[in-house]
Length: 407
Image (cartoon, rainbow, N blue to C red; front, side, top):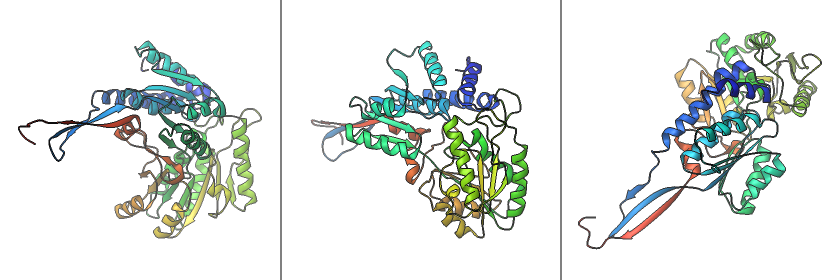
């Protein structure tokens, strides 16, 4: 993967419209780091010998779960390939992985590299295809022992149902989000604006953990909105293969139309369109970086996952209020907190019902850091040692001890 990093980065940009600078500098190194991390786990997975009442020798074995079915999304196909394939192989399983129909190229290419490196035939199988057919078959198959899915909450429910109706295979789900990014009144506004901007607009806004509800304290709200407008208007949108481009096209026409529909909903609902709100040019699926202010929590754009370059900035007055509002959602994937107060950071980190809280940073994804959600943002965790649990069975082996020297 390291030897072919340039080709992998180009495929990932070509397939999904990501800026090449993003795939080459961030995503390919993160994917290779993840695979190396789990390669390091392969000879460190072991069971235990545990004491028991009476003359018995008890072994607790950790065994491969078997055939792991995996379904990855179109927004980060390379990273999701690594997050899922790495731990599954480290635990000794075989894999059948379905790519998103929009973005099959990087997974197919990297799988070929793994076979070139010596992976036996039949261990890793990549199947491009559509969700209702290929994905449905994988979730329903009686020969699949475990399923891992990353995608929308709606599709996650279907995957869970199909898995239950077939052979009750265990399922891990990494689903949608409507993550709060909270800016306190003691924050450095310039830094907070940039961090909130990247938290939302990264990857064309097509991130499950995007900081899509930007809560800003009333004392710095107006300044924050003005500076967010200026930053959005400086964002460079264009050909993802050109140097300096920060934002490429949305994934396809369906998503493009959906995002513009949310813009209309925001305007119709009474939010203030601060900047953007239209397509860029007359060709391609490019959308202007868009900022809304003066939102109410019940508005559609403040409730639903948009998956696009639309920043929604909401005003709050005190910590208890923002905790209540931030948690008032079906989702619970991630949150950002920007403050100079350690006490405030600790209060918010414990009060927010989410799987990841980034304090004075955002989108920090090391291979060792677990990732997953509360509530309807998913079941289970990926990455780190926690992901290994998804791909192992625990077996107790008990044998009698005749005339033991000690117990």
